Image (spheres, rainbow, N blue to C red):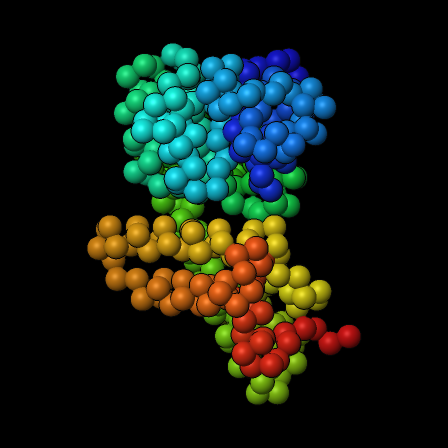
Length: 306
């Protein structure tokens, strides 16, 4: 593939590092920055350029991608301290900022007010698919922004995601909304599955038989059919996405529900279960630790028979 636009990538964590690697693998010139320089070493060794700060990364980029843990991190990286000195001010006219973080429309709107008058385009494009999807380049990507900007940036996004799952949700901010809704429903499914299967196993059903019955019924979900299989088989609660980020996302979903005036009792209960799990196992414990919480409370491991 011939060289395309220079892609700057800020945020090389569990998700960002493999996403950036796929951008480079697709043939795009890559400039990278992370607050931990060691996180960039494999990419630099493979040919990426290192930028000493986020502003330097933005200045070198035709397309700047950010993949950051929280909305506060997005604000700090783009706007800097007191709205000065961040990457937003270094973006060149004609460039594009794509935020792939799980953030909020409000933070992105602050950045847009700074960059759009200078001719910088913006997309919000958060992702789903876990670390495995980031490594494989098969992420789902949920895009908010105008269709023309998405079309121009699609080759970069296709380096990281499944082309059939790069979905234009609507105007600015709606990509974030879609991602929060997807995460919220997934976490609800996890808690519901843990509770229901705990009841069934305690009542005498074998886990594998009960799981098969649910999958063959109208009550099935991908969470029961596939995602929690690593727990049932290996006791793997997926530390690639920690409880601290689960609770952050649930807090953002709760805030969104409140802002739009929707009663959110199930959201509140789901957040309560995960916060109890985090208090019990710590913020670094895996995202499926709500299952572990039910197992420990009922003294009933949810495992397939040997």
